[in-house]
Image (tube, rainbow over all chains, first blue to last red; front, side, top):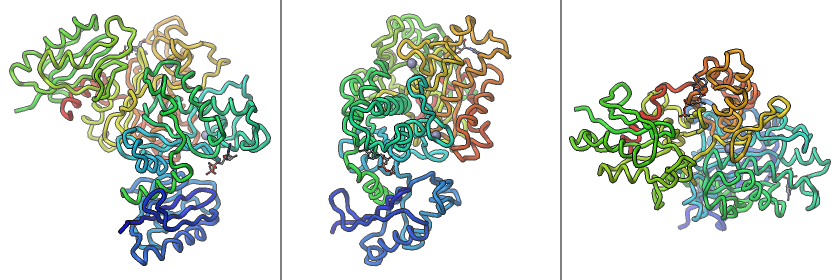
Length: 296
Length: 296
Ligand SMILES: Nc1ncnc2c1ncn2[C@@H]1O[C@H](COP(=O)(O)OP(=O)(O)O)[C@@H](O)[C@H]1O
Ligand SMILES: Nc1ncnc2c1ncn2[C@@H]1O[C@H](COP(=O)(O)OP(=O)(O)O)[C@@H](O)[C@H]1O
Ligand SMILES: [Zn+2]
Ligand SMILES: [Zn+2]
Protein backbone atom coordinates (compact mmCIF):
# COMPACT_ATOMS: atom_id res chain seq x y z
CA UNK A 1 0.00 0.00 0.00
CA UNK A 2 1.25 3.45 -0.95
CA UNK A 3 2.30 5.58 2.02
CA UNK A 4 0.88 9.12 2.12
CA UNK A 5 2.24 12.20 3.85
CA UNK A 6 0.92 15.64 4.67
CA UNK A 7 2.42 18.88 3.40
CA UNK A 8 1.64 22.49 4.20
CA UNK A 9 2.98 25.42 2.24
CA UNK A 10 2.28 28.24 4.67
CA UNK A 11 2.67 31.45 2.66
CA UNK A 12 2.01 35.04 3.58
CA UNK A 13 -0.78 35.22 0.98
CA UNK A 14 -2.17 31.68 0.90
CA UNK A 15 -1.85 28.29 2.54
CA UNK A 16 -1.68 25.12 0.43
CA UNK A 17 -2.42 21.81 2.20
CA UNK A 18 -1.79 18.53 0.48
CA UNK A 19 -1.88 14.77 1.12
CA UNK A 20 0.42 13.01 -1.32
CA UNK A 21 2.91 10.22 -1.86
CA UNK A 22 4.97 12.37 -4.22
CA UNK A 23 4.66 14.51 -7.35
CA UNK A 24 1.70 13.31 -9.41
CA UNK A 25 0.45 11.16 -6.52
CA UNK A 26 -1.83 13.64 -4.80
CA UNK A 27 -4.73 12.28 -2.76
CA UNK A 28 -6.18 15.60 -1.63
CA UNK A 29 -5.33 19.27 -1.86
CA UNK A 30 -6.82 22.53 -0.64
CA UNK A 31 -5.78 26.19 -0.75
CA UNK A 32 -7.15 29.11 1.20
CA UNK A 33 -6.08 32.70 1.86
CA UNK A 34 -3.87 33.52 4.84
CA UNK A 35 -6.10 35.42 7.25
CA UNK A 36 -5.77 35.52 11.06
CA UNK A 37 -3.70 32.69 12.53
CA UNK A 38 -6.55 30.99 14.45
CA UNK A 39 -8.72 30.81 11.34
CA UNK A 40 -5.93 29.76 8.95
CA UNK A 41 -4.38 27.20 11.28
CA UNK A 42 -7.90 25.99 12.11
CA UNK A 43 -8.61 25.29 8.45
CA UNK A 44 -5.27 23.51 8.13
CA UNK A 45 -6.12 21.21 11.05
CA UNK A 46 -9.61 20.51 9.68
CA UNK A 47 -8.14 19.59 6.30
CA UNK A 48 -5.81 16.97 7.75
CA UNK A 49 -8.04 15.62 10.54
CA UNK A 50 -9.82 12.88 8.54
CA UNK A 51 -6.51 11.60 7.12
CA UNK A 52 -4.94 11.50 10.55
CA UNK A 53 -7.98 9.81 12.13
CA UNK A 54 -8.03 7.16 9.40
CA UNK A 55 -4.28 6.69 10.02
CA UNK A 56 -3.49 7.43 6.38
CA UNK A 57 -1.19 10.27 7.46
CA UNK A 58 1.18 10.16 10.43
CA UNK A 59 3.79 12.69 9.37
CA UNK A 60 3.34 16.24 8.09
CA UNK A 61 5.89 18.71 6.73
CA UNK A 62 5.41 22.45 7.12
CA UNK A 63 7.11 24.92 4.78
CA UNK A 64 6.62 28.32 6.31
CA UNK A 65 6.99 31.98 5.42
CA UNK A 66 9.31 33.74 7.82
CA UNK A 67 11.26 34.72 9.67
CA UNK A 68 10.77 31.58 11.74
CA UNK A 69 12.56 29.97 14.67
CA UNK A 70 14.30 26.80 13.44
CA UNK A 71 16.26 26.10 16.61
CA UNK A 72 14.88 22.84 18.00
CA UNK A 73 16.22 23.67 21.44
CA UNK A 74 14.42 27.02 21.57
CA UNK A 75 11.16 27.63 23.45
CA UNK A 76 9.79 29.30 20.36
CA UNK A 77 10.83 26.54 17.91
CA UNK A 78 8.38 26.52 15.02
CA UNK A 79 7.08 30.03 15.70
CA UNK A 80 6.78 32.77 13.10
CA UNK A 81 8.87 35.46 14.78
CA UNK A 82 8.79 39.12 13.77
CA UNK A 83 6.56 39.44 10.71
CA UNK A 84 4.57 42.66 10.09
CA UNK A 85 1.61 40.42 9.05
CA UNK A 86 -1.21 41.19 11.54
CA UNK A 87 -1.58 38.53 14.23
CA UNK A 88 1.26 36.34 13.01
CA UNK A 89 4.19 37.79 14.99
CA UNK A 90 5.04 35.16 17.64
CA UNK A 91 2.41 32.75 16.25
CA UNK A 92 3.11 29.13 17.21
CA UNK A 93 2.50 27.64 13.78
CA UNK A 94 4.22 24.28 14.33
CA UNK A 95 2.95 23.74 17.89
CA UNK A 96 -0.66 24.63 17.05
CA UNK A 97 -0.79 22.15 14.18
CA UNK A 98 0.97 19.40 16.19
CA UNK A 99 -1.35 19.85 19.16
CA UNK A 100 -4.46 20.12 16.97
CA UNK A 101 -3.72 16.86 15.19
CA UNK A 102 -1.59 14.88 17.65
CA UNK A 103 0.98 14.35 14.92
CA UNK A 104 4.68 15.24 14.90
CA UNK A 105 5.54 17.62 12.08
CA UNK A 106 8.75 18.60 10.30
CA UNK A 107 9.32 22.34 9.97
CA UNK A 108 11.48 24.53 7.76
CA UNK A 109 11.39 27.77 5.76
CA UNK A 110 9.40 27.85 2.51
CA UNK A 111 12.61 28.27 0.49
CA UNK A 112 14.54 25.53 2.31
CA UNK A 113 11.55 23.26 1.73
CA UNK A 114 11.49 24.16 -1.97
CA UNK A 115 15.21 23.36 -2.16
CA UNK A 116 14.53 20.05 -0.40
CA UNK A 117 11.65 19.33 -2.78
CA UNK A 118 13.80 19.83 -5.86
CA UNK A 119 16.65 17.87 -4.28
CA UNK A 120 14.56 14.95 -3.06
CA UNK A 121 12.20 14.40 -5.97
CA UNK A 122 14.37 15.18 -9.01
CA UNK A 123 16.92 12.34 -9.40
CA UNK A 124 19.40 14.50 -11.32
CA UNK A 125 19.52 16.99 -8.44
CA UNK A 126 20.61 14.34 -5.92
CA UNK A 127 24.11 14.64 -7.38
CA UNK A 128 24.05 18.44 -7.30
CA UNK A 129 24.82 19.38 -3.69
CA UNK A 130 25.18 22.29 -2.89
CA UNK A 131 21.83 23.16 -4.42
CA UNK A 132 20.22 26.57 -3.93
CA UNK A 133 16.60 27.63 -4.43
CA UNK A 134 15.88 31.32 -5.00
CA UNK A 135 12.43 32.83 -5.11
CA UNK A 136 11.88 36.28 -6.59
CA UNK A 137 8.30 37.33 -5.91
CA UNK A 138 6.68 39.60 -3.34
CA UNK A 139 9.90 39.10 -1.40
CA UNK A 140 13.21 37.53 -2.31
CA UNK A 141 14.32 34.41 -0.46
CA UNK A 142 17.02 31.79 -0.71
CA UNK A 143 17.10 28.26 0.67
CA UNK A 144 19.54 25.48 0.11
CA UNK A 145 20.94 22.02 0.61
CA UNK A 146 24.61 21.95 1.68
CA UNK A 147 26.37 18.72 2.63
CA UNK A 148 23.07 16.84 2.44
CA UNK A 149 20.93 19.01 4.71
CA UNK A 150 18.99 22.27 4.55
CA UNK A 151 20.67 25.51 5.60
CA UNK A 152 19.88 26.53 9.15
CA UNK A 153 22.22 28.40 11.47
CA UNK A 154 21.90 31.40 13.70
CA UNK A 155 18.41 31.95 12.30
CA UNK A 156 18.11 30.93 8.65
CA UNK A 157 19.55 32.49 5.51
CA UNK A 158 18.06 35.83 4.51
CA UNK A 159 20.07 36.17 1.35
CA UNK A 160 17.24 38.10 -0.32
CA UNK A 161 18.51 41.12 1.60
CA UNK A 162 22.10 40.87 0.43
CA UNK A 163 23.91 44.05 -0.56
CA UNK A 164 24.78 44.37 -4.24
CA UNK A 165 26.19 47.14 -6.44
CA UNK A 166 23.59 49.82 -7.25
CA UNK A 167 24.61 52.40 -9.85
CA UNK A 168 22.42 55.42 -9.08
CA UNK A 169 23.31 57.00 -12.42
CA UNK A 170 21.67 54.11 -14.26
CA UNK A 171 18.92 53.41 -11.72
CA UNK A 172 18.14 56.32 -9.37
CA UNK A 173 15.31 54.33 -7.71
CA UNK A 174 16.13 54.18 -3.98
CA UNK A 175 14.64 50.70 -3.35
CA UNK A 176 11.69 49.60 -1.25
CA UNK A 177 13.22 47.62 1.62
CA UNK A 178 12.08 49.21 4.89
CA UNK A 179 15.33 48.07 6.54
CA UNK A 180 17.95 48.66 3.85
CA UNK A 181 16.43 50.64 0.98
CA UNK A 182 18.48 49.28 -1.89
CA UNK A 183 19.36 45.76 -0.80
CA UNK A 184 18.55 43.00 -3.32
CA UNK A 185 14.90 42.71 -2.21
CA UNK A 186 14.64 46.50 -2.17
CA UNK A 187 15.84 46.77 -5.78
CA UNK A 188 14.48 43.66 -7.45
CA UNK A 189 11.39 42.18 -5.74
CA UNK A 190 8.07 42.26 -7.62
CA UNK A 191 6.83 45.24 -5.55
CA UNK A 192 10.06 47.17 -6.28
CA UNK A 193 9.41 46.75 -10.01
CA UNK A 194 5.80 47.86 -9.56
CA UNK A 195 6.88 50.97 -7.65
CA UNK A 196 9.77 51.86 -9.97
CA UNK A 197 7.76 51.57 -13.19
CA UNK A 198 4.28 52.43 -11.91
CA UNK A 199 2.73 49.14 -13.06
CA UNK A 200 2.81 45.48 -12.00
CA UNK A 201 5.83 43.53 -13.27
CA UNK A 202 3.72 41.07 -15.24
CA UNK A 203 2.18 43.96 -17.25
CA UNK A 204 5.53 45.39 -18.45
CA UNK A 205 6.02 44.77 -22.18
CA UNK A 206 8.75 42.37 -23.24
CA UNK A 207 10.95 45.18 -24.61
CA UNK A 208 10.67 47.34 -21.46
CA UNK A 209 14.14 48.30 -20.10
CA UNK A 210 12.96 47.12 -16.66
CA UNK A 211 13.65 43.54 -17.68
CA UNK A 212 17.33 44.17 -18.43
CA UNK A 213 17.72 45.97 -15.12
CA UNK A 214 15.93 43.19 -13.25
CA UNK A 215 18.12 40.54 -14.89
CA UNK A 216 21.22 42.58 -14.02
CA UNK A 217 20.32 42.63 -10.30
CA UNK A 218 19.29 38.98 -10.21
CA UNK A 219 22.62 38.33 -11.97
CA UNK A 220 24.50 39.95 -9.09
CA UNK A 221 22.59 37.89 -6.53
CA UNK A 222 23.21 34.66 -8.44
CA UNK A 223 26.89 35.59 -8.99
CA UNK A 224 27.35 36.26 -5.28
CA UNK A 225 25.62 32.99 -4.35
CA UNK A 226 27.86 31.21 -6.87
CA UNK A 227 30.96 32.75 -5.30
CA UNK A 228 29.74 32.10 -1.76
CA UNK A 229 28.51 28.51 -2.01
CA UNK A 230 30.01 27.15 -5.23
CA UNK A 231 26.65 25.46 -5.86
CA UNK A 232 26.19 22.76 -8.47
CA UNK A 233 22.62 23.90 -9.14
CA UNK A 234 20.79 27.21 -8.72
CA UNK A 235 17.02 27.08 -9.12
CA UNK A 236 15.25 30.33 -9.89
CA UNK A 237 11.60 30.23 -8.80
CA UNK A 238 8.85 32.67 -7.82
CA UNK A 239 6.62 34.91 -9.93
CA UNK A 240 9.14 37.29 -11.52
CA UNK A 241 11.44 34.68 -13.19
CA UNK A 242 8.36 33.32 -14.94
CA UNK A 243 8.68 36.23 -17.34
CA UNK A 244 9.76 34.60 -20.63
CA UNK A 245 13.43 35.19 -21.38
CA UNK A 246 14.39 36.54 -17.96
CA UNK A 247 16.31 33.48 -16.78
CA UNK A 248 18.32 33.48 -20.00
CA UNK A 249 19.25 37.13 -19.46
CA UNK A 250 20.30 36.27 -15.91
CA UNK A 251 22.57 33.49 -17.21
CA UNK A 252 24.29 35.89 -19.62
CA UNK A 253 24.73 38.51 -16.90
CA UNK A 254 26.27 35.99 -14.51
CA UNK A 255 28.83 35.05 -17.17
CA UNK A 256 29.54 38.74 -17.78
CA UNK A 257 29.87 39.56 -14.09
CA UNK A 258 31.97 36.53 -13.12
CA UNK A 259 34.06 37.34 -16.23
CA UNK A 260 35.84 34.01 -16.54
CA UNK A 261 37.02 33.90 -12.94
CA UNK A 262 35.22 30.65 -12.05
CA UNK A 263 36.80 28.29 -14.55
CA UNK A 264 34.14 25.63 -14.58
CA UNK A 265 32.45 24.39 -17.76
CA UNK A 266 29.14 24.68 -15.90
CA UNK A 267 29.65 28.45 -15.73
CA UNK A 268 31.57 29.03 -18.97
CA UNK A 269 29.56 26.74 -21.27
CA UNK A 270 26.66 24.88 -19.67
CA UNK A 271 25.20 27.68 -17.59
CA UNK A 272 21.73 26.68 -18.81
CA UNK A 273 22.21 23.51 -16.73
CA UNK A 274 23.55 25.41 -13.72
CA UNK A 275 20.80 28.06 -13.45
CA UNK A 276 17.40 26.50 -14.08
CA UNK A 277 13.69 27.04 -13.34
CA UNK A 278 12.15 24.66 -10.76
CA UNK A 279 11.60 21.18 -12.25
CA UNK A 280 8.56 20.86 -9.98
CA UNK A 281 7.19 24.24 -11.15
CA UNK A 282 4.94 25.84 -8.56
CA UNK A 283 4.80 22.52 -6.68
CA UNK A 284 8.38 22.84 -5.38
CA UNK A 285 7.26 24.23 -2.01
CA UNK A 286 4.46 21.80 -1.29
CA UNK A 287 6.42 18.78 -2.60
CA UNK A 288 9.27 20.02 -0.42
CA UNK A 289 6.91 19.89 2.56
CA UNK A 290 6.11 16.27 1.65
CA UNK A 291 9.85 15.53 1.41
CA UNK A 292 10.34 17.10 4.86
CA UNK A 293 7.62 14.82 6.22
CA UNK A 294 9.28 11.77 4.67
CA UNK A 295 12.85 12.53 5.75
CA UNK A 296 11.90 13.84 9.22
CA UNK B 1 51.65 6.82 23.02
CA UNK B 2 50.61 10.12 21.50
CA UNK B 3 49.61 9.89 17.84
CA UNK B 4 51.22 12.43 15.50
CA UNK B 5 50.01 13.73 12.16
CA UNK B 6 51.49 15.75 9.33
CA UNK B 7 50.20 19.14 8.19
CA UNK B 8 51.16 21.33 5.25
CA UNK B 9 50.02 24.91 4.84
CA UNK B 10 50.82 25.44 1.18
CA UNK B 11 50.65 29.20 0.65
CA UNK B 12 51.48 31.31 -2.37
CA UNK B 13 54.33 32.97 -0.45
CA UNK B 14 55.53 30.25 1.91
CA UNK B 15 55.00 26.62 2.85
CA UNK B 16 54.69 25.59 6.50
CA UNK B 17 55.22 21.90 7.31
CA UNK B 18 54.46 20.52 10.73
CA UNK B 19 54.31 17.26 12.66
CA UNK B 20 51.96 17.59 15.60
CA UNK B 21 49.33 15.96 17.77
CA UNK B 22 47.45 19.23 18.14
CA UNK B 23 47.93 22.88 19.16
CA UNK B 24 50.87 23.11 21.57
CA UNK B 25 51.93 19.55 20.77
CA UNK B 26 54.30 20.20 17.91
CA UNK B 27 57.08 17.68 17.31
CA UNK B 28 58.70 19.42 14.33
CA UNK B 29 58.08 22.40 12.12
CA UNK B 30 59.70 24.03 9.11
CA UNK B 31 58.87 26.93 6.82
CA UNK B 32 60.36 27.82 3.45
CA UNK B 33 59.46 30.21 0.62
CA UNK B 34 57.25 29.02 -2.22
CA UNK B 35 59.54 28.80 -5.25
CA UNK B 36 59.13 26.44 -8.22
CA UNK B 37 56.86 23.44 -7.59
CA UNK B 38 59.59 20.75 -7.89
CA UNK B 39 61.80 22.49 -5.35
CA UNK B 40 59.02 23.40 -2.91
CA UNK B 41 57.28 20.03 -3.08
CA UNK B 42 60.70 18.36 -2.84
CA UNK B 43 61.46 20.17 0.42
CA UNK B 44 58.03 19.20 1.75
CA UNK B 45 58.70 15.52 1.02
CA UNK B 46 62.17 15.67 2.60
CA UNK B 47 60.72 17.23 5.74
CA UNK B 48 58.21 14.43 6.27
CA UNK B 49 60.31 11.47 5.06
CA UNK B 50 61.97 10.58 8.40
CA UNK B 51 58.64 10.70 10.25
CA UNK B 52 56.99 8.49 7.66
CA UNK B 53 59.90 6.02 7.62
CA UNK B 54 59.87 5.75 11.41
CA UNK B 55 56.06 5.21 11.16
CA UNK B 56 55.39 8.18 13.43
CA UNK B 57 53.22 9.76 10.73
CA UNK B 58 50.81 7.88 8.48
CA UNK B 59 48.38 10.64 7.60
CA UNK B 60 49.05 14.14 6.29
CA UNK B 61 46.67 17.05 5.67
CA UNK B 62 47.34 19.62 2.97
CA UNK B 63 45.82 23.11 3.14
CA UNK B 64 46.46 24.69 -0.22
CA UNK B 65 46.30 28.09 -1.91
CA UNK B 66 44.06 27.99 -4.93
CA UNK B 67 42.11 27.66 -7.01
CA UNK B 68 42.39 23.89 -6.55
CA UNK B 69 40.45 20.87 -7.80
CA UNK B 70 38.58 19.34 -4.84
CA UNK B 71 36.51 16.87 -6.85
CA UNK B 72 37.69 13.42 -5.80
CA UNK B 73 36.32 11.89 -8.98
CA UNK B 74 38.29 14.26 -11.20
CA UNK B 75 41.54 13.33 -12.97
CA UNK B 76 43.09 16.53 -11.64
CA UNK B 77 41.93 16.06 -8.02
CA UNK B 78 44.44 17.79 -5.75
CA UNK B 79 45.90 19.95 -8.51
CA UNK B 80 46.41 23.69 -8.28
CA UNK B 81 44.42 24.77 -11.34
CA UNK B 82 44.74 28.21 -12.93
CA UNK B 83 47.05 30.30 -10.76
CA UNK B 84 49.21 33.05 -12.32
CA UNK B 85 52.06 31.84 -10.01
CA UNK B 86 54.87 30.69 -12.36
CA UNK B 87 55.04 26.90 -12.70
CA UNK B 88 52.11 26.19 -10.40
CA UNK B 89 49.23 26.15 -12.90
CA UNK B 90 48.19 22.48 -13.26
CA UNK B 91 50.72 21.42 -10.58
CA UNK B 92 49.79 18.07 -9.00
CA UNK B 93 50.41 19.11 -5.41
CA UNK B 94 48.50 16.30 -3.69
CA UNK B 95 49.65 13.51 -6.02
CA UNK B 96 53.32 14.54 -5.89
CA UNK B 97 53.37 14.48 -2.09
CA UNK B 98 51.43 11.21 -1.89
CA UNK B 99 53.70 9.49 -4.40
CA UNK B 100 56.86 10.96 -2.84
CA UNK B 101 55.98 9.66 0.61
CA UNK B 102 53.71 6.69 -0.04
CA UNK B 103 51.16 8.18 2.35
CA UNK B 104 47.53 9.07 1.72
CA UNK B 105 46.84 12.75 2.32
CA UNK B 106 43.74 14.82 2.96
CA UNK B 107 43.37 17.90 0.80
CA UNK B 108 41.38 21.14 1.01
CA UNK B 109 41.70 24.88 0.46
CA UNK B 110 43.73 26.93 2.93
CA UNK B 111 40.60 28.74 4.14
CA UNK B 112 38.49 25.58 4.45
CA UNK B 113 41.36 24.06 6.44
CA UNK B 114 41.55 27.12 8.67
CA UNK B 115 37.79 26.85 9.27
CA UNK B 116 38.25 23.15 10.06
CA UNK B 117 41.13 23.98 12.42
CA UNK B 118 39.08 26.47 14.40
CA UNK B 119 36.11 24.11 14.40
CA UNK B 120 38.00 20.99 15.39
CA UNK B 121 40.38 22.33 18.01
CA UNK B 122 38.32 25.00 19.78
CA UNK B 123 35.64 23.23 21.86
CA UNK B 124 33.32 26.25 21.89
CA UNK B 125 33.27 26.29 18.08
CA UNK B 126 31.99 22.72 17.84
CA UNK B 127 28.55 24.08 18.71
CA UNK B 128 28.81 26.91 16.19
CA UNK B 129 28.02 25.33 12.81
CA UNK B 130 27.80 27.05 10.30
CA UNK B 131 31.22 28.51 10.98
CA UNK B 132 33.02 30.71 8.44
CA UNK B 133 36.69 31.64 8.21
CA UNK B 134 37.62 34.78 6.28
CA UNK B 135 41.14 35.82 5.44
CA UNK B 136 41.91 39.38 4.36
CA UNK B 137 45.53 39.54 3.24
CA UNK B 138 47.21 39.52 -0.16
CA UNK B 139 43.94 38.06 -1.38
CA UNK B 140 40.56 37.63 0.28
CA UNK B 141 39.25 34.12 0.85
CA UNK B 142 36.42 32.42 2.68
CA UNK B 143 36.12 28.85 3.91
CA UNK B 144 33.54 27.23 6.08
CA UNK B 145 31.95 24.35 7.89
CA UNK B 146 28.27 23.79 7.06
CA UNK B 147 26.31 20.82 8.36
CA UNK B 148 29.50 19.32 9.81
CA UNK B 149 31.71 19.41 6.72
CA UNK B 150 33.83 21.89 4.79
CA UNK B 151 32.30 23.77 1.85
CA UNK B 152 33.08 22.22 -1.50
CA UNK B 153 30.79 22.27 -4.53
CA UNK B 154 31.23 23.09 -8.17
CA UNK B 155 34.77 24.22 -7.37
CA UNK B 156 35.08 25.79 -3.94
CA UNK B 157 33.81 29.09 -2.58
CA UNK B 158 35.49 32.19 -3.95
CA UNK B 159 33.56 34.61 -1.79
CA UNK B 160 36.53 37.00 -1.71
CA UNK B 161 35.38 38.13 -5.15
CA UNK B 162 31.79 38.90 -4.15
CA UNK B 163 30.19 42.05 -5.49
CA UNK B 164 29.40 44.71 -2.91
CA UNK B 165 28.20 48.33 -3.04
CA UNK B 166 30.94 50.74 -4.09
CA UNK B 167 30.11 54.44 -3.79
CA UNK B 168 32.43 56.14 -6.30
CA UNK B 169 31.69 59.55 -4.77
CA UNK B 170 33.22 58.43 -1.48
CA UNK B 171 35.87 56.10 -2.91
CA UNK B 172 36.77 56.77 -6.58
CA UNK B 173 39.45 54.02 -6.48
CA UNK B 174 38.57 51.54 -9.27
CA UNK B 175 39.84 48.43 -7.48
CA UNK B 176 42.70 46.06 -8.31
CA UNK B 177 41.01 42.77 -9.26
CA UNK B 178 42.16 41.82 -12.77
CA UNK B 179 38.82 40.07 -13.34
CA UNK B 180 36.30 42.40 -11.71
CA UNK B 181 37.97 45.66 -10.79
CA UNK B 182 35.91 46.60 -7.76
CA UNK B 183 34.83 43.25 -6.33
CA UNK B 184 35.54 42.75 -2.61
CA UNK B 185 39.13 41.60 -3.18
CA UNK B 186 39.61 44.45 -5.66
CA UNK B 187 38.50 47.05 -3.11
CA UNK B 188 39.72 45.69 0.21
CA UNK B 189 42.69 43.30 -0.09
CA UNK B 190 46.04 44.38 1.35
CA UNK B 191 47.40 45.25 -2.12
CA UNK B 192 44.29 47.37 -2.87
CA UNK B 193 44.99 49.42 0.26
CA UNK B 194 48.65 49.79 -0.73
CA UNK B 195 47.70 50.97 -4.22
CA UNK B 196 44.89 53.30 -3.08
CA UNK B 197 46.95 55.05 -0.39
CA UNK B 198 50.44 54.70 -1.85
CA UNK B 199 51.83 52.85 1.18
CA UNK B 200 51.55 49.39 2.73
CA UNK B 201 48.46 48.88 4.89
CA UNK B 202 50.47 48.17 8.03
CA UNK B 203 52.18 51.58 7.73
CA UNK B 204 48.94 53.62 7.65
CA UNK B 205 48.50 55.61 10.90
CA UNK B 206 45.65 54.59 13.19
CA UNK B 207 43.65 57.72 12.39
CA UNK B 208 43.97 57.34 8.61
CA UNK B 209 40.54 57.37 6.87
CA UNK B 210 41.59 54.21 5.03
CA UNK B 211 40.72 52.16 8.11
CA UNK B 212 37.11 53.33 8.19
CA UNK B 213 36.75 52.59 4.50
CA UNK B 214 38.35 49.15 4.92
CA UNK B 215 36.06 48.31 7.83
CA UNK B 216 33.05 49.47 5.78
CA UNK B 217 33.89 47.07 2.93
CA UNK B 218 34.72 44.17 5.24
CA UNK B 219 31.40 45.00 6.93
CA UNK B 220 29.55 44.46 3.66
CA UNK B 221 31.31 41.15 3.07
CA UNK B 222 30.54 39.95 6.58
CA UNK B 223 26.93 41.21 6.34
CA UNK B 224 26.43 39.34 3.07
CA UNK B 225 27.96 36.17 4.51
CA UNK B 226 25.69 36.55 7.54
CA UNK B 227 22.64 36.89 5.28
CA UNK B 228 23.76 34.03 3.01
CA UNK B 229 24.79 31.40 5.55
CA UNK B 230 23.28 32.53 8.86
CA UNK B 231 26.57 31.45 10.49
CA UNK B 232 26.92 31.07 14.24
CA UNK B 233 30.56 32.18 14.10
CA UNK B 234 32.56 34.32 11.67
CA UNK B 235 36.33 34.28 12.13
CA UNK B 236 38.29 37.15 10.65
CA UNK B 237 41.90 36.17 9.96
CA UNK B 238 44.76 37.26 7.70
CA UNK B 239 47.13 40.20 7.90
CA UNK B 240 44.78 43.18 7.53
CA UNK B 241 42.39 42.40 10.44
CA UNK B 242 45.42 42.32 12.70
CA UNK B 243 45.30 46.10 12.67
CA UNK B 244 44.21 47.04 16.20
CA UNK B 245 40.59 48.17 16.33
CA UNK B 246 39.65 47.06 12.83
CA UNK B 247 37.53 44.07 13.86
CA UNK B 248 35.59 46.24 16.27
CA UNK B 249 34.84 48.73 13.49
CA UNK B 250 33.68 45.84 11.31
CA UNK B 251 31.29 44.68 14.06
CA UNK B 252 29.74 48.16 14.33
CA UNK B 253 29.39 48.43 10.55
CA UNK B 254 27.67 45.04 10.31
CA UNK B 255 25.12 46.18 12.90
CA UNK B 256 24.60 49.43 10.97
CA UNK B 257 24.27 47.69 7.60
CA UNK B 258 21.97 44.87 8.79
CA UNK B 259 19.99 47.61 10.59
CA UNK B 260 18.04 45.37 12.95
CA UNK B 261 16.79 43.02 10.25
CA UNK B 262 18.39 39.88 11.69
CA UNK B 263 16.74 39.78 15.10
CA UNK B 264 19.27 37.63 16.88
CA UNK B 265 20.93 38.64 20.15
CA UNK B 266 24.23 37.48 18.61
CA UNK B 267 23.91 40.28 16.05
CA UNK B 268 22.10 42.91 18.12
CA UNK B 269 24.02 42.52 21.38
CA UNK B 270 26.79 39.93 21.43
CA UNK B 271 28.35 40.63 18.06
CA UNK B 272 31.79 40.48 19.70
CA UNK B 273 31.10 36.74 20.15
CA UNK B 274 29.81 36.33 16.60
CA UNK B 275 32.69 38.02 14.76
CA UNK B 276 36.03 37.06 16.29
CA UNK B 277 39.73 36.78 15.46
CA UNK B 278 41.09 33.22 15.07
CA UNK B 279 41.47 31.50 18.45
CA UNK B 280 44.45 29.62 16.98
CA UNK B 281 46.01 32.88 15.74
CA UNK B 282 48.29 32.30 12.76
CA UNK B 283 48.22 28.55 13.47
CA UNK B 284 44.64 28.16 12.20
CA UNK B 285 45.77 26.96 8.77
CA UNK B 286 48.41 24.50 9.85
CA UNK B 287 46.32 23.15 12.73
CA UNK B 288 43.51 22.84 10.21
CA UNK B 289 45.79 20.70 8.07
CA UNK B 290 46.41 18.49 11.12
CA UNK B 291 42.64 18.27 11.70
CA UNK B 292 42.17 17.27 8.05
CA UNK B 293 44.74 14.51 8.55
CA UNK B 294 42.93 13.28 11.66
CA UNK B 295 39.39 13.37 10.27
CA UNK B 296 40.34 12.07 6.80
N1 LIG C 1 4.76 36.29 -15.12
C1 LIG C 1 5.27 37.21 -14.29
N2 LIG C 1 6.23 38.06 -14.71
C2 LIG C 1 6.74 38.97 -13.90
N3 LIG C 1 6.38 39.15 -12.65
C3 LIG C 1 5.44 38.35 -12.14
C4 LIG C 1 4.84 37.34 -12.92
N4 LIG C 1 3.95 36.70 -12.16
C5 LIG C 1 3.99 37.29 -10.94
N5 LIG C 1 4.89 38.30 -10.92
C6 LIG C 1 5.24 39.17 -9.79
O1 LIG C 1 5.65 38.34 -8.72
C7 LIG C 1 5.15 38.81 -7.48
C8 LIG C 1 4.41 37.68 -6.78
O2 LIG C 1 5.31 36.65 -6.53
P1 LIG C 1 4.91 35.14 -6.33
O3 LIG C 1 6.16 34.37 -6.26
O4 LIG C 1 3.93 34.76 -7.43
O5 LIG C 1 4.11 35.13 -4.96
P2 LIG C 1 4.60 35.36 -3.46
O6 LIG C 1 6.02 35.86 -3.48
O7 LIG C 1 3.67 36.40 -2.92
O8 LIG C 1 4.46 34.02 -2.83
C9 LIG C 1 4.30 40.02 -7.77
O9 LIG C 1 5.05 41.17 -7.43
C10 LIG C 1 4.06 39.94 -9.27
O10 LIG C 1 4.00 41.23 -9.83
N1 LIG D 1 49.19 44.50 11.00
C1 LIG D 1 48.72 44.70 9.76
N2 LIG D 1 47.82 45.67 9.54
C2 LIG D 1 47.32 45.86 8.30
N3 LIG D 1 47.67 45.16 7.23
C3 LIG D 1 48.57 44.19 7.39
C4 LIG D 1 49.12 43.89 8.65
N4 LIG D 1 49.97 42.85 8.50
C5 LIG D 1 49.93 42.51 7.20
N5 LIG D 1 49.09 43.33 6.52
C6 LIG D 1 48.75 43.29 5.08
O1 LIG D 1 48.27 41.97 4.79
C7 LIG D 1 48.77 41.50 3.54
C8 LIG D 1 49.46 40.16 3.77
O2 LIG D 1 48.50 39.27 4.22
P1 LIG D 1 48.81 37.96 5.06
O3 LIG D 1 47.51 37.40 5.48
O4 LIG D 1 49.77 38.33 6.15
O5 LIG D 1 49.57 37.02 4.04
P2 LIG D 1 49.05 36.26 2.72
O6 LIG D 1 47.67 36.73 2.39
O7 LIG D 1 50.05 36.65 1.67
O8 LIG D 1 49.11 34.82 3.11
C9 LIG D 1 49.69 42.57 3.01
O9 LIG D 1 49.01 43.28 1.97
C10 LIG D 1 49.98 43.47 4.21
O10 LIG D 1 50.11 44.82 3.79
ZN1 LIG E 1 16.58 44.56 2.83
ZN1 LIG F 1 37.48 39.84 -8.26
